[in-house]
Each structure stands twice: as C-alpha cells, then as structure tokens.
Image (tube, rainbow, N blue to C red):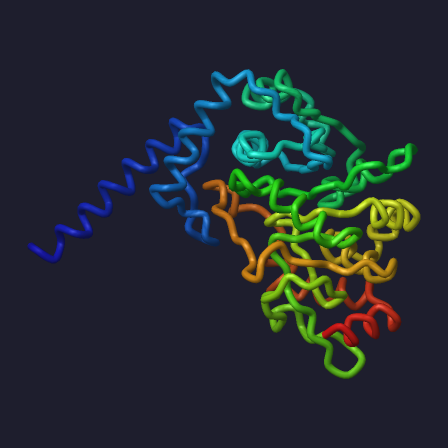
Length: 309
C-alpha cells in the first residue's frame, strides 16, 4: 500500500497540471521530446497568459533588431506564448514579425489579435517556403538592410535578457552571427562529421566552425542579410527543411563567423504540446541535416571551417 501512494500522488498532480495547462490555452505536453512542463514552466505560462489577456504594453522597443518567427496551423493557438516571452524582455526589438505561409491561417486566434493591437506584425506570404518562411520574406525586401534580424522559434519560452544578451554580444563581435546555442562542426578529411557527432560550442570566440541554431535564437548581421538576398531561393533545392544549414553555409561563404553568447549553450523550456510536430527527428536522426549540409557546403567553405576547427 505504501509503495502505491507516491504514484497516486504523482498521478493526481499530473491531472491537476494538465487541467491548469488547458486553462492557460496550451496543450498538456507529450513528454515525447522534452515538452512535459515543470511547475516553474506552468507558473511562467500563467504570467504570460495574464499578460496576453490584459496588457497594453507595446511589444516593440528600442533594441536595434527585427525579431522574426513563423508557425504552422497545428501551433497557431500556441504561438502567443513564445511571442509574449519576447515581448516581456528587458530589451524589445524595433519590430516583431510573425510570417505565415498557410492560407488557412487568414483568421487569427484572439491571442494573436491582441498582440497585433500591441504592435506585432503578422505578414502572410505565398506557400512554399517551409521553414525558411521565418527569415526569407524579411530578408528579400527591396530596401537596404539597416538593422540585424534575430530568428526565433515558435516553441520556446525565452528569458527576459534574451534579446539584450544577443545585442550585447553583437557589440563585442561586430559583423558576426551571434547565437545563444551553437554546435562545433568537426571536419574529418574533406567532409564534416555526421551532425549527431558535433559537440556544443564551449567558448565565445567567433569561428567558422560555430554552427548557430535558431531554436535558442540567433542574430544575423546586415552583411549576412545582403549575402542571403543575393543567393535568392537556392535553399529550396539545397536545404528545403534546414534553414540553419543555409544560414550558416551562406555566412561561411561570405566570410562571416559565428560567436556564442556565453561559454555554455542556452536551452530554454518548450511551450507544452509543441513537440508533436516539427522537423527535429527527420533532420537529426533521419540524417536530413547531413544530406543538406553536404549539398550546401562547398570545398572552400569546408576548408574555412576546418582551419578554424
């Protein structure tokens, strides 16, 4: 009997937590890939939900960057949480843009309508860009770029200093890509080792071997934005499901290194219920990343990476 009490208590707590998450307008979380929420995450979601319901604070600020994000239909009712976590930051961007490429999302949920009234830009584009919807429409505009772009993901809860830390690191390393989380590309012979063998970056030095990941956010400098615009839509053939691969390959090709904000890579809580969809398993364990890395990196890029590694 005694042995059954802890499991019963855990079950009661789990049911209560699930009911609380439903009240917050998010899914319970599957536990399939690290999206089962802790009590701290649930508490943070409650604060963000209240902010979404009652706040009139502008999501924009004076941070010299444009933060971009995209989402898909299964997550359209969850994306408010990631956006609110950015909007409550100690530093807010000059613009915060959500790009959508799904015509079925023409009517937005009330959570996003409230954010629009506070300055969120929701832009619609023609389908076909996939994961590159996050950044390409913002880069592809006609006017010269004057501010960096910061990529963000729709399934993360970002801390208050998230943007301030990116901008601070960008000031220390002008012209570099700045990432909160990066892997170190290891080259063996004339080719990179498999993606699953790359190790976390453990320093803050700019390097061609540093591979930034947008999941924790990365800042793309103006020079890179111009290089990306010049390359057009070649990513649709070479890296259709791996935007980070295309961003990094273009940076190396343009002579731009990547620096991590701190010596330890940052990992943030997932928005509960978001990990039932996404490309992670296909790209990482289905070797999708490796195929697209091989397609995107030429001999000169690999030589630069190997020299820095």
